[in-house]
Each structure stands twice: as C-alpha cells, then as structure tokens.
Image 1: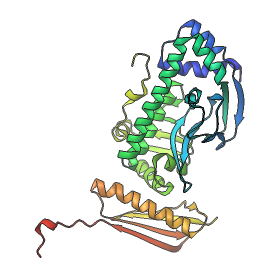
Image 2 (image 1 turned 180 degrees about the vertical axis):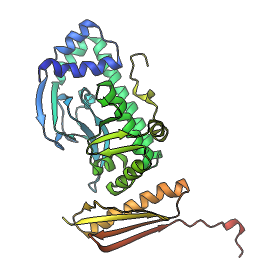
Image 3 (image 1 turned 135 degrees about the vertical axis):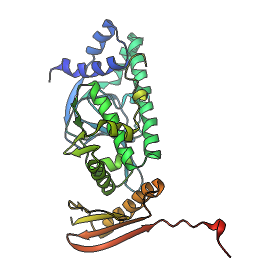
Image 4 (image 1 turned 120 degrees about the vertical axis):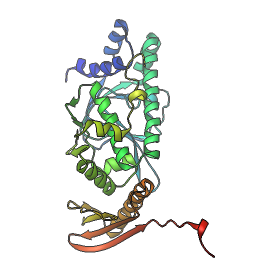
Length: 243
Length: 81
C-alpha cells in the first residue's frame, strides 16, 4: 500500500470531524508511520503494557476490550480504518484495556514523540486529536447506555447502526449492506449476552425482516423498521466539523 | 470438542438450533444455557410478552439438559390470609 494511502485514511477521518488547514494537512501527511500486518484476533497492545506509539487502523477491524477475573471479555468498541483507537495512550502511557485485531489488519504505528512534536508545532492539529478522543468518549457513553438499557434485539441493532454510520464516512457501505466481521461469540462479548442469545436475536431479526447477519456482513432488510428498533441518533458521533 | 444444540422455547414460540455450537464439556454448555435462559427471560419478561422460557440442550439428537425459567407474579394486595 503506498504510504500516502496510509495517511490519507487518517486524514479522511479527521476531515470529517474537523476543518483542517493546508499546512496542518501537510504535516499530518508527513507523519512517520511504521506499517505492520497482523493476523485476525491478535493482540496489538495489552492491558498493563506501556505504550510508546499510537496505532492507526489502515485496513481491517480492531476492538478494544477488557477481561475480568473469571476470563470473560467485554468488547468496549469496534474500530475501522482511519481511526487511532489508542490515541489516549499519548497521555495515558500504561494501557488500561486491550487493543486487538478482529480481522487480518494493516496497522500503522506513529511514535508518541512524533505526535507530540506535531502537536507542539500545530496547535490546531492537537485540538483535532483532542476532539477525536472526546468523540471516542461520547461513543463509550452511548455504548454504556446501549448495554445497560436496551433489550437484546435493539442492542444489536444499535451497534449495527453505529457501525454503518461510521463505515459510511469512509465509503464502506454498499447499498443496504456493510461489513460486520464479528462472530456470534464476539457480538455476545460486545453486547454482554451469550453467543446462543445472539444467535436467537439474529434469527428473530431475520424472521422479522429487519436485518440479516451473514458471513461477516449485515444487510438491512427494512430501513424503517431497522431505524425504529435501533433507536439510533448519530448526534453523538459529531460527524461534521460544526456539530 | 463436542457440539451442543440449544433449542429455545418462549411460551409457545419454538426456535430450533440446527447449527449448534462447540463447548469444552457439558459444564460449559450448562453455563451457556443457564446464562442464555436468564438473559432471554430478562428481555422477554420485562417486555411482558412471555412468562416461560425453556432451553433444551442436546448433543446431536440426544437430550442432555432442560433449563426452565418461569415468571410468577402474585397480586398480594388482595390475597386472603
């Protein structure tokens, strides 16, 4: 993958969320990025580890998660190309959760030193990255509401609707369908229900003609029903520089 | 790893699990069934749609476990002593 394409993924995402000047763009594109390939379900950085670089998802899907004493894992967020899931590690150096790949991934690593230098040179870029971590926090708030309050079918539909809204920004929604490369076990870990319950919910959503999950893709069958069930309002994603 | 099937009944609505799922042993399958039953019951009971959730676990066609969860609400304000 040409190196410009790697930074372009980041730039495209940041531009969606904030206005970026030409000078700032030039410096973002000049960031030194070390690209590495990862297999599916591999640890990128683990809970308790000290971090010296941030990870840009160039291609593939990642998740952040936390595992409790009895071994059960809670998936906290799903990450798509263009995102830097561990941006907070720039200031919080010891990881308080795991970052791992969901699918085979191409990841770009940017050293904390390079990012800090960029922030000092370009305060606007620092603000953009700050804004990015605030949106990250807004997504966590929504995730808590979803897992804490919605019943299974709405919970699954909401995660799907959010993923679709974010994939749309990077041009990865194809008509009524989009990638959702999670196994039923992983969806269960995201929603806080068992894989068997996920299976039951997925069957119900298909039978009700709302949405279908098959081989890592979600296809919305009835847009109106899907919207009503998911109770999704994209406001918390702040997908425009002025929102 | 053995494969277990989890057939689910919510009142008279039956969902057969044709695919099944692998678990380490019967204990792991039991834990999954209990948690699934409790979780489905939570959703359905709160929605007020269902009062009885049953999970039948089988290995292939051999029945293994039946987990049954029932909602019982008694109106104690008008109960006679």
